[in-house]
Amino acid sequence: MHPLFSKLTLFLETTVSPISNDLDSNSTLLKNCYQQLIELDGLRLRIPCEYGGLGFERYEWIEYTSQLAGYSGALLFLQAQHQYAISRLNKLLPDPKIASVLQSLAKKNIGVGVGFASNKKILTVEKCADGFYISGMLKWVTGFDFFPHILLSFDKDDIDYYCFLPFEAISHSLILSPILEPIVFSATNTVSITLKNYFIPFEKIIISHISKPKVPFEHPAIYSLLGATKALLKIAATEKYHYNSLVKDRLKVLSEEWKTYHTEVMQSAATDPFRLRAAGLELAEKCLSFAKLVCDTQGLLKTHAITRINREIWQYSIGGYSEGQLEAYLKHT
Image (cartoon, rainbow, N blue to C red; front, side, top):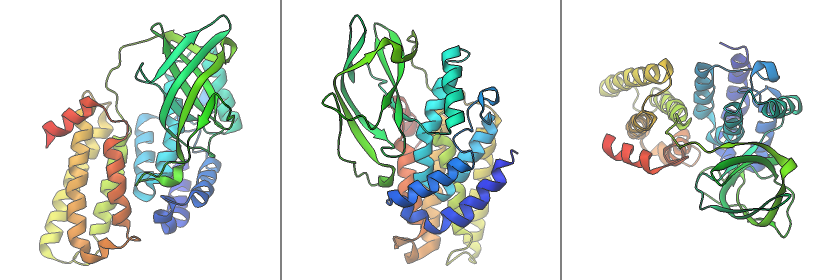
């Protein structure tokens, strides 16, 4: 395992764990932890080694995500924006422009938000002699005041274009909403971005390529559910009724189910990622119900870890949601 993990474990146990509940709603605390994660090289994980990153293998990325999910969903969710942007850029290698962008991000050690218009109806794009005029709304863009810019993708005539959109350059053509207040991870500063004939010159386009049909991919929420479930079992093992023989028996059964699921996730990339995520949600909710029973009334306290994880499982279940995933959930339950 990469040496980063020993530093990450220490950071999570000593710095993050005591304030896990507060991180969901306190942007100042979250920013402090985010900066410390940057200092641990947390933003370079998925950048290939040849471009200045750590070049994490798939199994290392799963373990990293799973660990963070057990301590702070807010910190995980925030940096996941950057990691997803990097994963999209990695798929466009070995283009030299992409290699240059990755090298620059690794050297500066800065994060990138995401603003992908996966639905062509979200943005209207008009091409002109010098570039593009873009209008529309990106409803959920996370990381205002954390990231200097976001990676924007848009489609025109069945060609996908990528560029950086500055987060701070507010004007009559780029308008940010007030910070939204979701029930989960309000500290991550999610906003809506409205573009009104926003001009993007050709020289600002990082890369373009022919649009490809959308296919299901292994959403990292699978790994987050894995980590949240492990944290729930850890809680149940020490709470009020942990000594009860039936509790011990159920804990053993659920722990074995977690190990089986962990093995399935780790073995190889999912051939049916929708089904795998549905199985992860089912196991997480089963363990959540069990942990609630073992915790008794203590689980009603705002400061209890189970309260935080309860909210976060909701986020992991619907983040990056699609109709295909909905159908998999309904078929699995």
